[in-house]
Image (cartoon, rainbow, N blue to C red; front, top):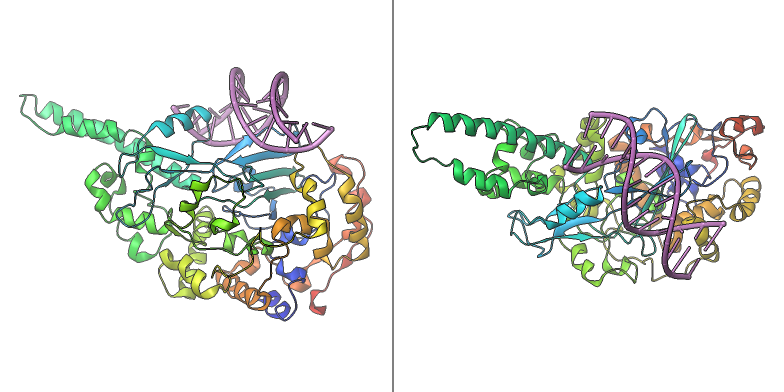
Amino acid sequence: MVIMSKSSANSFEDSDCICSYGMKLPWDINDPKLPQQELKQFDSFQEWTDGYVRFIYSAEDKNAQRHLSGWAMRNTNNHNCQILKKSCLGVVVCSQSCVLPDGTKMQLRPAICDKARQKQQKKLCSNCNAALELIPCRGHSGYPVTNFWRLDCKAIFFQAKGVHDHPRPESKSETEVRRSAVKRQMSSSHLAQKKRFLESEAGRYHDSGGHMHHLSYMEGPEHFSLITEPSFPIPPQHYSSFQNTDPYKASYDSVSFDGEALPAFQKCSNPRLYMPRPPCGYEFAVPGYISSSSYPSFYKDSNSPPDADHVHLNGPQQNFGGLNVSDRNFDSTIKNHGWKQIFGKTGCDYGQAQTNAAHPYYNGDYSCRYGNTPSPTASTLQTVITTTTKVSYQPYKSSMVKYSDNIYDIKNLPNYNHMTDNTAETIFPEVKTQEDFGVIRSALGYEQDIVPTKSERVESLDAYRYGGCTPGNYSEHVGHSFRYENNEY
DNA sequence: CGCTGCGGGCAGC
DNA sequence: GCTGCCCGCAGCG
């Protein structure tokens, strides 16, 4: 891990603290021209992005193509066909905040479709029969966190704005797995019932009635949300607890809520330990590593619903769970192994381990978003941050100067300031932080996927100018590119 | 049936 | 004008 170890001796002002490739290049989703020619690599897909982060994915990345997110994001019309905007729907929880047998809480993925979501909210908590409640996301100045996707030739540019102020819902892949499982089970149980019915034609009493009743109650996939997760790459001790069985079977039996399948899923996939997370988390642009959606209540916007706070301190939140989930779509096994090796614990404890040990700023003892004075630039750039529809050129005039004047001082770039938004002035435990990230990433093997070594960082920032909006003609503006040796740092 | 993206339209600022 | 948000529609699986 070259970057971390070397830059760790320097202040946080180092751009090296920015770990994603997308964060290393100065760009904003609204820029008329996105960096193209200087793209030497791409970020690996991040399912659980959080904070003001940017990534540049390969246009061939399937997940990026699908604009996937672990968060339940719905399409939002921003009247800009160039940029796809999505806003977070939050998370569905039990209105009674009931505690599941394993001590965690229900956190369902809100249905994306409005109608489906309304239906979903009419259903009852599978654990306590209480009503379900949708916790809206207000992580972006009181509005839902927004994700922006923009395809530009070879790359898919991703930018997120806002910090999720609610627990993580079940990931999309988890939901899909569960739904398909439910369907399978429904059909199989239906067949089984038919069979049993035929076998008991004589009218003998059997339990099909009760079963049916149960099924009707458990009709929605939501009711199985926390039960199973067969494909989730979780620690062997948990995974093996049901990998050789049919996890869906158990989900049909309410008794199984107390069974082993539930904890396996609960602890490793969905449940979020709401550990205070550093506001600087996204400063490092490594949501994949510290993509916790958990924040202390004071971290929330003032207009957040007061009752949402209980969520923050409830239930386990694994900060790295998202990484696991995300990687499942790729090749996560190795990376998860890395985690195991690092912490020597079960994956279920990764977040905890990371929180308490690996990450010094997961102690909740740090400055927060609202406890700090925003930088002048940050405030003026707020408009840039929230600009989602039409490109606003004014804020970028200064950035152009910056690009050419001091390409190294990325912190001074408006784009990076807006990136940090309100939390920019937080005091960071830079050194340790970066070292820790280095360790983590190294163990994860991410340095190859996401973070280029310093010598690999070649950027042609002078090419970053604003001309016409035709995507294809960008190369014409490219003059020369200069090499950017970070070893100087 | 639900997810996704698109786009019209409206309201607030 | 920008933004958030609602709505309906269509394509897809």
